Image: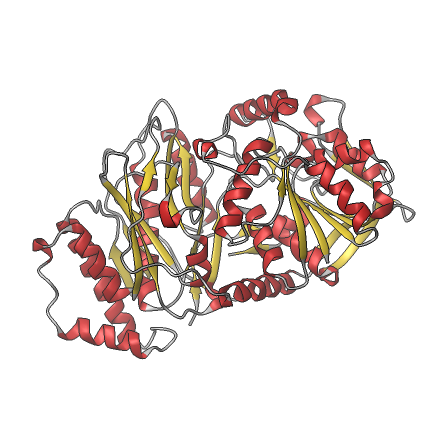
Length: 211
Length: 351
């Protein structure tokens, strides 16, 4: 299975564990990982991925920077304030740091010349009808790729998204999925395309637990 | 025989990965149009689903959770089978300790932790001196011996048998005469079949913790990845930790010390102008393959940066981010959930 993973891996949390599972599978040919802004800045995600892949003894797996932090600066400020003032209940959000943490300053490899959307497009041509995209964070990188080539969905075998929250009637918790909140335009774009799109909403994840 | 502790965590991205690897995990799905709100600020990101058989969007509504669990366990077990890098015995890579992070650590509270009615130990200790270490070791040794007597050292291991027998029949070293570091070695040589110890130091060279890699052959089903992040709806804090719990003598020690550390952190935070950030680091490799215990006996800031041979092997084990008010909310919430508390940690049966 040819997979490109797009993630906002912040600390070793569920994103990290998902990455670990993919790496553990013999069936997966993980072609690359994109860093997307969300739980933290995409630049920090990039550094986190570098660190995580070393930890998982897969240091040569290619990683690609996502849409830069600057575009989301205002959103993150709003998110941080909402969390701080408790005016918003996010689901699926981690990492409320105001900025990249110190260890990001550690030496990381030079960013490749390609960014995440470049790589998605390239892989979609090389592995037409084979490529599976897994998006664990906001969908900005994928949206950028579609903006550049709206035929992308035709070449992708499937897109699996972690996101969305469909509260049951009378749900007392007025929570909103952080991934879709962070970049709602990108989220809507994914659902308006003709991707063979599997959406795993938080409702299911909340029903499935592990210890 | 297997037991596990800690709260349950919702599977999010892990479940997504499993579904991707095995779509047959999906038991129910809906073809639907999905609308994401982007108008009113207060509803931004809210999703609306409208059934539409012509849609290419497949919304997962029900998953075979037990099969997903099995899949995760199986994949993790596979990782454990992979060879791990060798770590020289007692090699002590250096760690940098970032500055500028205010860490409040003023008082220590002894808290009695109940594993069940039979295993009780006063486990929260300020382990900074040889005497502190001794006082921590003694009840741990008793726990191990009790477990052995009950035939609950699992899996059976001649090596562990020999260790326990040796410990039971020989005089323990005069702890007061030993340096803390020597005591660390004794602890893990004797009880955790230590493979290596990495000392964590502050920038001025002062020791602030240590990590130990045990060399036990461990049951795979016991890999536990705990995460507290999402169980508190008010996001009052972020905390996550991952550790391997195995019912062996070494890991009994790990459990006790690991949890005591958790409680130590949870009970010793004092109010400060900025949130206190504490962390214990842990090598994922050792977690998934051997079992590693990291203990900090001084507060360790979040940004412990490894260099040397351990570079890239750090996983944040605990991170607690809260002030006094948040701490209170945190503890209250945990208590409400009944999963963990200052005076109760109760094992649950492993499914």
